Structure formats: C-alpha cells, structure tokens
Image 1 (cartoon, one colour):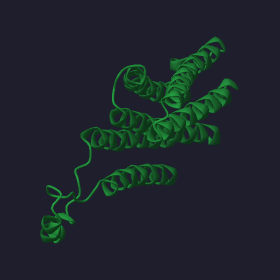
Image 2 (image 1 turned 30 degrees about the vertical axis):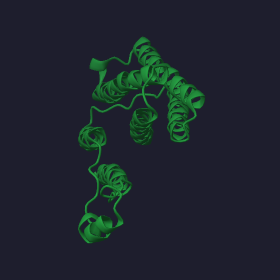
Image 3 (image 1 turned 180 degrees about the horizontal axis):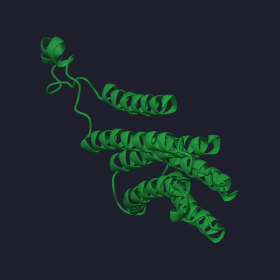
Length: 228
C-alpha cells in the first residue's frame, strides 16, 4: 500500500507541476493598442491576470490525473490480491526488457520532436514524430509477443489471479498507448501538411508529455511486477 501511495503522489504531483508551469509560462499582460500610458494605468490590474491555459493542455492534465488514479487503484488491488494463498507469480518474458528500451527510445524521439518544433526545425520534427510513432507501434507489437509467449507456455488469463492481473495491467497500458497513437497521427498530418508552427508546437508538446507519462507508468508497473 505504501508503494501505491508514493505512486499516486508522485504522478499527481508531476501532473500538477506541469499544469502550473504551463500557466506561468503564459504572457501575464499585453499592451493595450501599444499605448504606454494605457499599459501603465492597467499595469497593476492586468499583471495579476494570467492568460488562460490552452484547453487541450488542461484536458490532458485532467486526463492524466484520472489515469493516475486508475493505475493507482489497479496497483492497490494487485497488492491486496497477492496476499492470498492462491497467488502464484508468473515469469516475466525477456522481451519485456526489450519493450522497455523501445518505449524509452520512443519517448526520447518525441522529446526531440518537441524541442525541434520550438526551434522551428521542421525536418527534425518529422524525424522525431516518425521515429516516436514507429517505436510506439513496435512496443505494442512486442507486448503482444510477450502475451503470446506466456500463453504458449500455459500462463493463461484464467490460470491464476497473477496471470489475470498481468494481462489486465499491460493491456490497459497498451490501450492508453493506442489512444496516444491516434493523437500522434494528427501531429503527423500537421508535420506533412500546412499547419502553422504554433499549432505544431502545441501538438508535439502534448504528445511528448503524454509519452513521458506512459513511460513513467510502464517503469512503475514493470518494476512493481518484478518486485513481486
């Protein structure tokens, strides 16, 4: 249970920090028709009013908070259920380590795309987005291969509660990644389309943050399963 509490606090804290950081990065005031006197007269009032956070960033923050709660509840249930006598831990296929490396690289590629978008380097953005997407697909395929290996070895969903939890946790994580790929496909269209740079920067930022989040979730889940 202690692990679950730490997990929730860290992830929720990270989401909150990201939202606050984005709010503080907004321009807190703007000149009124370029008139210096207007700026001075409105200085005290307008300087205390931050520009609103883009709705897509706010929506992502709320979604990450909900997802964090969901995974925390899953881990809590996992911790409680494993105390029963019928719990028999299953082996972790070696390919899960390979998949972990692939997801790390995917996250790094999207971070590269985000950084390149801020520098308005379109060619680099294309490399980052394409690389991140391809590696994300490779991760999902690798997870399916892990399922196949376990199933062929007799570790079926109905065989043991530990088996069921493994398939559930990895499956829910995979579904979240699939949802991210749908969002990433929109960024791909923008990169090879005519979308302006501001829109592209926002899209790559949201994708990168989401991928970093999914990487953190996977590291925690995988580490938790290895420790039990």
